[in-house]
Length: 371
Image 1 (cartoon, helix red, strand yellow):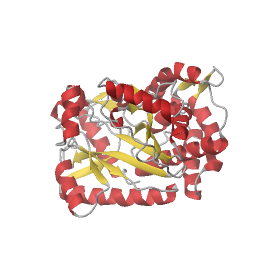
Image 2 (cartoon, one colour):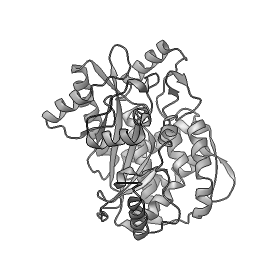
Image 3 (cartoon, helix red, strand yellow):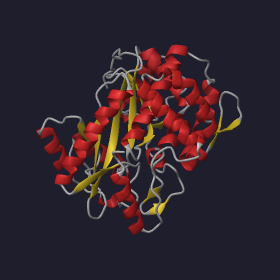
């Protein structure tokens, strides 16, 4: 594996990737129409839509932004474009971290060498990986800052996961988890978090070179960490999120990620020790996945158990001044208002356990995707 140099980028610049469900307009089950859909989009110059691991999903990639005002406009434009193209194939785009009643055994692996290799290596897990996430990229000036920021943001993994949680149903059953998707991701051997001993870019290069020498990874794409550096983009990539139910909420999460990163980079606040942070990391991550915003978490700074909702409200107050534009402040205020009211931070439908009610709920969810 060739070692990739970290490409310098402007601190706090913003990008986003969003994995989208493709639904059959009649049955609301997943529809393997991504190859035809991408062929049509690419033929007309819409290169921001990308292939994903199975044929019932695709990814929207944003361009680089300085603030969420322009990001929001771009995502709405892409969303409307995708919906229009989907309609020509009798399909609907939809958010959510899992499809509530699809059968993983019916999924088809996309025709790409990387995905064929992925399926060969991971067997049935490759088709079960038909889950949907959001990745947020934050620009960093250098590799050392990127490694430091990965550790700093790890403190907020439970907060970010809980805010995005949008996958309570799996295979037609209520999972009992706010984010069941996170359990699927955790099944892969290179998931989790960046090792605590990595303190700078040289440490990271040595670590990944060692993994490659043992055949554990072939490229940095094989690292499924919740947060990882993306050296070819010059970013830190936050990967913990479920795909939200709406595009607006996806941009809210991007606004919070950017504000947190700018707060850390500009203020360099004191951080919890990494031994303390990562000793409770798995527990906190599980609690957020299980209970969403009703979780409690063990605060690595104080060693005390705290309300995740209350701590997030405090965080929003602190980082609001680091929002990149008035639109970002508005998006952060929307998060705070919903948390104070005890409401879900995003649109979510109510559905019973039967597949028919799940289908009705899913149709309503798809209709609200462009909200």
